[in-house]
Length: 448
Image (cartoon, rainbow, N blue to C red):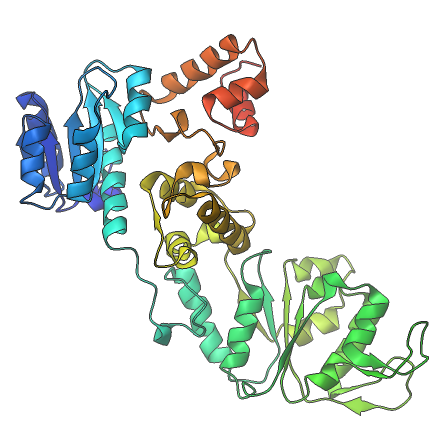
């Protein structure tokens, strides 16, 4: 038996069932009673419109018969007046009707008889979507965050914020570890901003962006004539950051020779410019970052063990976006801005996607969707194809969440491949999915 905690958003919710079948209304009422939900029942859409004018609901179930929506006005009026999601149900479902109702604005389309688990799962998601549209997850107050650009309520990010406040005011080296795109430079900036060096410069250098010879010159400076092209004496970043913070990103890319010079700075604060004999000193707080496992790099001889222990006095590990739960929704709203909305299908796609490029990829996806949106609301087909496994111009079948489950998907794939004579490109376009998604389905259903 599935715990009622699995459907936590159904607890004490209020649902309206617009269905001429009193037995179905009773079925829904008894099913949701275990969640202490309140269920109102009416016989048709006009009566439902009268109900929503006087009451607030978290979800609506609407029986639509067997036909495709020649007139979707009742559905759209229910959505507009109630501010919640409408789930269509039918005792005589067809694929064409299911697709048409979802395109018309239904949150989902369920075939009767509806299984208890299926109904609870869809309604739980619909209630959550409606509540987020009415009251989007709030961004934590500035007082809870070390930087106003940092957003997150997950336990993992709260721990990051806590460590920033503890480690930032110290002067010890800090190593930030995390996948590309997780916001390592933003964390470094937050650490600097809460330190005693906040009024001084924080200078950033990315080791992956510079070859070894240039990186050494960039960090430590050079004398005129010390190498080809050195037409003037140039101070390095350690000198420029004196009194402040130096953030070295992607330190795992640093060569052994430059690592040795960096180690000496950390040991006694001294260094020499390239081509110089004079020792120089700098008072710099060092923050480093990497997307590599530096312990493994040490074991394999690619990173100096003594340097590793010098920079790893305090470590901050940033979680990838896929491990941050509701932070994904928070961040999506944050990057959208107050003047934008997002529909439930797009929001679910954003929450399901694993975001291998992390926050950087999410920002790009939201910016793309805003450009493609024509009405100030981001929809599923505005998102990049890989996010929802749909093509940007065809939201139809892929918008369905549960209509006859796996059998429907398999049937759709089979029909598309037959109609397009096995041409996968055209079949993917007809289905409204990416070719990559089609290949996965063909392999899954053993259709070759």
